[in-house]
Image (cartoon, rainbow, N blue to C red):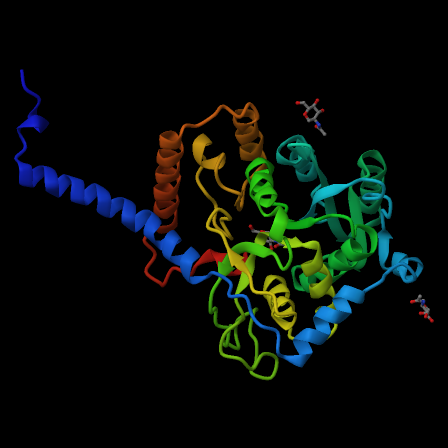
Length: 369
Ligand SMILES: *[C@@H]1O[C@H](CO)[C@@H](O)[C@H](O)[C@H]1NC(C)=O
Ligand SMILES: *[C@@H]1O[C@H](CO)[C@@H](O)[C@H](O)[C@H]1NC(C)=O
Ligand SMILES: *[C@@H]1O[C@H](CO)[C@@H](O)[C@H](O)[C@H]1NC(C)=O
């Protein structure tokens, strides 16, 4: 008996094939075009101010300031990096109250301490605890795991820019050895294996690296009734500079220094990830886009997809545990399986995004991830 599909005529086959191709082109085309268009162009630094920031970053010497700087941290953890040749320093932005979630992260994606023979060190960056009892818990946790840096600043979504500056200051002061710095949101999932492999391929040209999901030409919020409102005085330009979405992005050590040096001259009350973009621009560093970072978007779980991407956002405790259970063994995915894994998770992610068919404009969640 002949299968019904085999009775199709040539033009019907062509039509089917065309649809399959179109589907893939639509699904992945945007990524390719994005990555191509958002290539950072290597600037020639003729701007005197840019040159000055780069020169100051190069000469930055924190050794004498160490003593004073300690006072800006309730837990300064100055030995967290010392004596180790750290390849990737991971700074997870966390809040004092989420001890349980930190424990989950330690047990799951941050459990990996090496890519190949290169060392990864994961630290949690916290602000001040809301109560003495929480602070007690944090102190005990810090003693037990030795992986906490706590700044003396109020923990609040409005304080993420000063928190980022404190984190960068910590890096340039206590961890100048780390070659790359990943800043991540505690609700994110990060795949050290793939990210590590990617960074290892960059070994030779690792200067000026600022990579993540680039948000291109985002407009500041000009609606006075919005909590993120920015007046023209606070931020006069039409667009934000291109920047990497805050849920996960990577800086090379020199960029961390440049951002830290430039931060002293940036005063706009923009979101913290935009702030990093502004500082980078002042230092002549352009962000590099990679679609393997998800930005503020949650990517539906699929083993072969999660073994390919660098990060996904908004992953809950339970989900993190089950994802890790599944991923830990690193069963290998063939090229075809990876490809279909990507198709599946991308298609499902799009469906999630449109699942409510809300009437308003669907804002890209990337911007404030
Ligand atoms: C340390 O702080 C004191 C007081 O704020 C200041 O006078 C001194 O210059 C600082 N030292 C360094 C090395 O920054
Ligand atoms: C990381 O995983 C190993 C092996 O699965 C386990 O023995 C270890 O306790 C884990 N580390 C943490 C901090 O949970
Ligand atoms: C982390 O992500 C959550 C939502 O996914 C967001 O509410 C929170 O502000 C983010 N925190 C940081 C430090 O970006």
